[in-house]
Image (tube, helix red, strand yellow):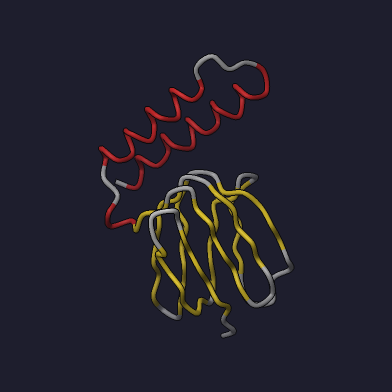
Length: 129
């Protein structure tokens, strides 16, 4: 099976740099999968679970947002925050929810709609526990 270079970085650290066969991405407009020879795409992430398949191995990361750049040869994820799923805790997610709710206060119109979507997406992370 064809592979592509996959890189995942956050402001705190570089989490991955491997040859992957498939990357499942929580895109802001919906989940999608990138594979070798994918058409070029630049999009944003929503809070969710990013899954990286390398052969029979699957590695999962919780991401809170950021950007994804896909080319036929590589996928690069620049995450606001990224944590290996094994390191995710309920306290961590509750803190992210509180931050998202605080950011939604005093907003109105389309900005409030986007903030409320982020709150809902962040609350959905509790299913990772």
